[in-house]
Amino acid sequence: MNVLVVYWHPEPKSFNGAMFNKAVEVLEAEGHQVKTSNLHQMKFDPVSGRHNFTTTSDADFFKQQLEEMHATEQNGFAPEIEAEIQKLEWCDLVIFQFPLWWFGMPAMLKGWVDRVFAMGRTYGGGRFYQDGVYKGKKAMLSVTMGGPEEAYVKDGWNGDLNGILRPIHRGILEFNGFSVLAPQATYGPARKTEEELIDELEAYAERLRGIFSESIVTIGQY
Image (tube, rainbow, N blue to C red; front, side):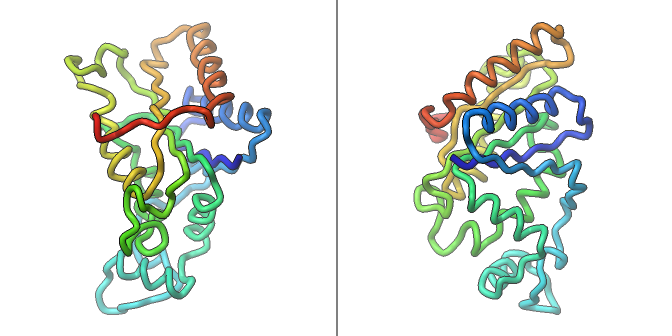
């Protein structure tokens, strides 16, 4: 199967970096084809604008969605955006590896979504949710949190993790047709011992070995 791993963290030696490396290692060992988008290493520009495109629909007023639809018709996406869209079109599973910042994606990863999930190419024209462009593909968030697990439950300090991740699961992934797998959640890696971190990596590796047999989650039940 084909797997895309989209990863961002500013420190390659972080636990997020270890999770990213472990995913690539295990998936390739299992015989899957793996492509990556290491956004920090790529120095990916998260800011949208006319540089998203090589074509122009309206030179006097910039509306990104209209320019995306025009670029879809005219093959007019900038090379760096076209390359990322093609990775999404290629993969059977996309994994997002990132630290939860302010209850959401860090800016560079969110900017990747803003620029790459383009109207006309990845959604629109009645192609949403169960009829989305990426119907039949799966997606999973592998996310680290600064706090302990008890802070991310329904009555916890920060509230239910599933509720926190719902805007990503429902508003980005399911909206574009992906079937969503349960998140891989790592709580407080900076506070864990080396042995505990090794155990976390091995549990992730074991999950990845059977990832394509997992059942999807129903986000509407969150």
